[in-house]
Image 1 (cartoon, rainbow over the protein chains, first blue to last red):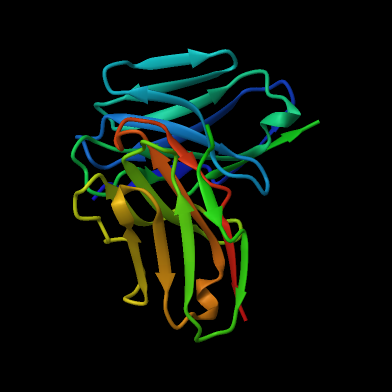
Image 2: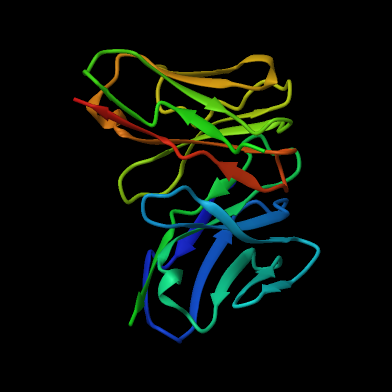
Length: 113
Length: 114
């Protein structure tokens, strides 16, 4: 089955700086890569996703890039704000895959004031 | 419409007892997932239902765990003879068509085995 590795496990950045979280996946047939944000005590929620037919997608201060050849994708957050503090999970899935969404282990993002 | 609903929100049970956790997915969603999240940890995949296909049970940690999805809607996760290591938050999610569509999570059931 699919295996998703996520790094770093913890990331601390100064408010206003950028944050980058990276994920690699093992199944070359995976074609959907969502990112979820989980605030303390709350449920995970989708913040952005990318499909394998594009290399980059942006939504205001967040962007995701995908390198299919290298089988890795990254989340970029610019001009970080205190409300960006949360745990971020990447995931991968493919058509016909039996195990649905496979998640990385998460990155705890801490925004320092 | 309503989101994914899980019940109970919290469950405290004695070691060795059986528990049932319920998930009501968003109406019309064909895919349903169960995940387990221990304190401060990631999302451990347990089981995945897609339409009428046989579920993928490869993530279930032991034969004490089982899950059903009746009528393609409500799902129940059953843990028999609970152990202390079963203590965690159990999250359910549903999506419209499974792969390549957004998964919506419920608020979770916090299970504590004492």
